[in-house]
Amino acid sequence: MANGLAVHGQRSAELVHQAPVTGRVKAALRVAPLRFLMAGYALLVLLIAGLLCLPIASADGKPMAFVDALFMATSGVSTSGLCVVDPGRSLSLFGQIVLLVDFQVGGVGYMTFFVVVVRLLAGGLRVNHTLVARESMAGPTLADVARFFRWVALVTLLFEGAGAVILTGCWMGEYSFGRALYLGVFHSISAFCTAGFGLFSDSLMSRQGDWVVNITISVVSLAGGIGFLVMADICGRFRRREMGDRPRRLSVHTKLALAVTAVVMLGGTAVVCAAEKWPASWTAGDRWRASAFQAISASTTDGFNTIDIGAMSATSLLTLILLMFVGASPGSTGGGIKTTTLGVLWTSLWAQFRQKDANLYRRRIPEETQGKAVAILMSFLIVAVLDTLVLAATEKGSFLQVLFEAVSALGNTGLSMGITADLSALGKLVLTVTMFIGRVGPLALGMSLMVKRQPARYRYAEADVYVG
Image (cartoon, rainbow, N blue to C red; front, side, top):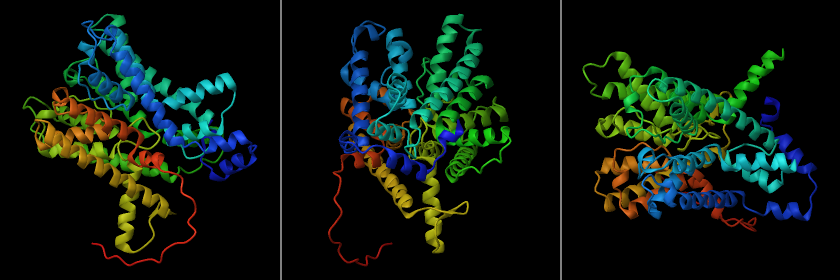
């Protein structure tokens, strides 16, 4: 299985070269994959918003305002988890299931379902559809995309199923088996998709002391946030060892993603634990558990919380903002600029100081990759600043509250200091657009809107510009 997931640019080139160059293929290649992907997400948002507007979707039988429905639908598709209504109280069973399907599709990537269906019904993939599928999950090549997505589906079912079983067992003492099973399935899927939607009004604050619930949610969200590419690389290494073959080395991508994830999570946990004023009755274990859960929640962008976010210290809040900004790893269900982007940026910066090549694990990082990392960073910063300025002018919250809300929406995290439900209509629309941008990515958004440039016939001479 892992052999089909290996990242080999040469093999991809051979596959493309061997494909028959027909008029249909040529026409398909002209379709911008990212533009098609954005259209798919937009249509899904409108469909879910329409369903949530139905009276049957509300607990009181009254139709939800379209602005609120659009916000909730976008929050689900982007797996942000920000809510203007309480899903557990305001939505009926039908509405909750619609929301569940929404963030399941949005979390794993709607093209996963498309590829699986096409593979089962037609037995193959068109080149343009393969390109779109690759973009939706940040996949590196065209090689065996259908097989990759089948593996994604199996991994998803494995982690979501295991999480659902454990959580159901935890809640059977409080609820009937049917209710406990429903809660377990809902929260497990929400955790793996790093959505953060819950059916408890206080998120998981009432479960703060439950070690099993805390660990289960954290592990499942870590699996969703680490990225399918990383898991495939690790599984491939172990499989080769079991078959008696010489284990191949983990890729630079996997090593970097794991290293940055460990650093930001451990660092975030330590800062939150040291900065917070904990209740006197809490033991050291309680403090570390709550700190680790919140750091993992912000870093994987799963959006659950076991402590009151609005009551946290400024130091802890700024730490969570940084963790949400960085986010999860590429090819995962999470958001943010991604862990590998931060790793490449740091490596590039360190290389500039030393006037050397940007090297990682005895490999040189291409300048194109470094430029892409800078573009992603600048895109996120620009959107975050603009959002904060607009929200500061239109909403009643403090600067720290609106900044936290803006970064949470952009990073598709869902943590909030408690001002989401009180946002104005304009504020809701701003965050709706922000969540959508955060999902498709500022760089991807810009690329999808660009007209394909023709090779330049001439280039101007270089100019020296002094910076810094």
